Structures are given as C-alpha cells and as structure tokens.
Image (cartoon, rainbow, N blue to C red; front, side, top):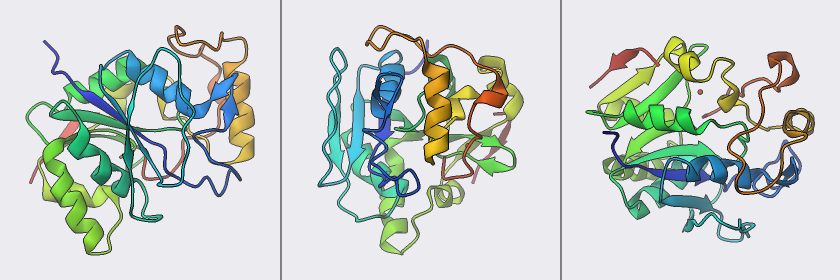
Length: 234
C-alpha cells in the first residue's frame, strides 16, 4: 500500500521574467495555481500552499488547501519548503511549483512512493536534479532552516545532508512519456505555449489533466531549482 502523502505547492515566487505573479497568471481559463492544485487533489487529502506575506491566492471551488507564509524575503523555494514542511499532516510531502499546469497525478504518486526508506526522492533530468517536483519528509525542515540561516538558498544543497534517492529519466518516462509534468512557465512565450496545450479543456475542478500535445509545442523544461533510477545516500 502506498504511504499517505501531503502536497506542497510553492507559489511565492515573484514571476519577474513572466512580468506577473505566477500563481494568478491565467492559462486554460484558470490561474496556474489551480492546475497544480487540481493535480495535487488527485493524490492527497492535504495540500499546503506556500505564499509571500503580501500575496493573495485565488480560491478554488472543490479543492481545499492551507497556507504557509514564507517570511524570508525573496529566498526562493527552499524558504517555501521550510515554512511548509512543519504544517504537513503526513510525514511525507511532494513539493511542486505553482507554474506546472501539465502535472500528472500519477507522477506525483510515483515520486512519493520513491521516498520509501529515504528523506528525499528527487528526479534527475538532463544532468540536473529537479527539486520542484520532488518528495521530502518533514524531518528535512531543520536542515532547510540551517542552510537558509547560513545564506544558502539552494534546495539541492539538502541532498548531501540526508539519505536521498535520485530518480532517473527512464523511470519517469514510463509514467509520463513526454515528461510534460516538468513543463513550467517562466516567460510570456511559455505561458502562450501552455495556453495552446490547455485549449479546449473544460476549466473546472473535475478535469483530471490536460491533453497530450506534441513535444515541440511545449515550452522547454526550465533549468531551475525544479528537474528516476540510481540511489545516492549519505
């Protein structure tokens, strides 16, 4: 039986390259945040959304979440994790970004399952670990706090500190052949391409996932603190 997990949606970024708040940017008839929340609702009964202190989040009918306030100004996704992990109701959480509207719930579940026996399970694509679609145990929170206190805001800096598993591309593609789940929105042109991918999908809380589209029509996966199978532990 799969272990119960929470989902953390990191929504506190400023969206500087996009020119607007990513959480509220519209695509496919709804805010980007809603697409991540819909995918999360398929795998968990506990969603935590990390936001900035001054940020207003658009509510979503039929999906409930609790909010974690990231008080570390502009310190990135590690600060969002630090704020959210103490609030999760399960020992395990999958963290995702709010700008990943093509997330497959079955991939979220697989990443959570890969965290059995370790503290972090993180996809590894194109030679880069992908911390914005990864599983974390609540025990990681103190490590995140220490890194931030020391001035290190990299989520990947957690890996040498705990037992972890890196998930290889072949395993990921068995669940998401085109790796659509890792599509993220950084620039206006990315948002336009995602809009095309979502066109025709009913914008309601019952839709399970966007339709598949040819890989060439999607924005490239971001080289960001985002990214199964070999295992690495310390």
